[in-house]
Image (cartoon, rainbow, N blue to C red):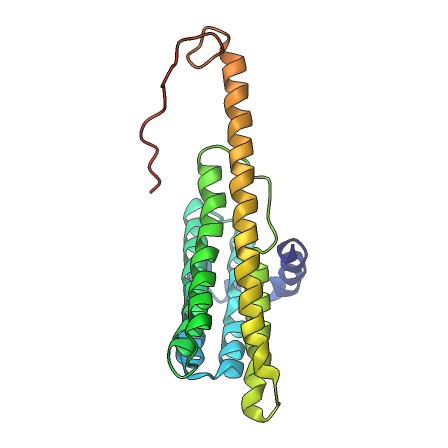
Length: 239
């Protein structure tokens, strides 16, 4: 949901900065790598120590690289499959670092096993939500659903809550409860989104197979009236 509107807005805002980097000879891949390193540093250096405000500030400074690198590639006319692959792969690494940082805090000085488990679930479910769409598209399905909580929502909800919760260290009382609430929201929302995508892939797969069977004609294997008892495709292991 946020992806559709926020990405378009920030793309326009960051276009001059992307053009400036190109004039200085910076490559889109370099921005992708630096941005991911900055997010990982902010998450894994500050969050495990409970310094959520400063960790969020550092992450926010670098997270916009996800928009800048693509903008640079388009302006330079060098968009490629490699760039898209690198960007998507490092997005997963950055997300893992953020929720891993939360998990390390709750496993250590945060001393809350339940919230540690919730943080780990947010990490894992976010990876699987992204994988379901990528895997569905790789087998030729459109996966025409975004779902309740995508990556943009996961990041905004968790980082805004973490940044505000970090104000507790500056004397703001009771505000630290926002992070646990946000983690539960992300966990439940990711589970719903996963279900939405799985149901969509199942429906689209059945429709595609029905269309293929109809196009092949009544004598094709698997068509009504043919002897395919017990037939089942083999293999199909996911990578």
